[in-house]
Structure formats: structure tokens, C-alpha cells
Image (cartoon, rainbow, N blue to C red; front, side, top):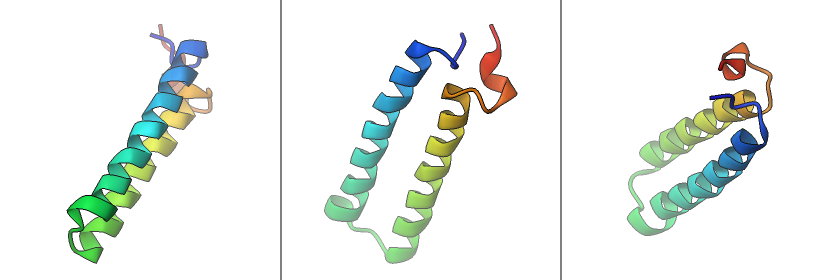
Length: 65
């Protein structure tokens, strides 16, 4: 599946909304320790950056069939 397409960009937008929701639940509802919250947030943001690279074509992996 080509991620560098309209469908890939729509899926990326949905994943961003879900990521923000997950981060909000961790920080506001679960409220674990500060270190875990920061590491978890960095982890989720790194996944979003990677998916963004695939969705907008700056990574050669996202152009496969």
C-alpha cells in the first residue's frame, strides 16, 4: 500500500488525533510518574514523526506498492 497518497495522509491525520488523545489520557487521567509521562510522550511523538515522513513522501519506504 502506498502511504504517500491521499488515503495515507488521511490515515496520518486520524493517527495524530488518536495520539493526542492517548497523550491526554496518560497525562490527565492515569497520571503516572513524570519520567514515564515524558518518555511515553516522546515515544508517541517519534511515531507520529515517522508516520508523517511515510505519509508525505520524505522516506523511501512509503513509496512501495
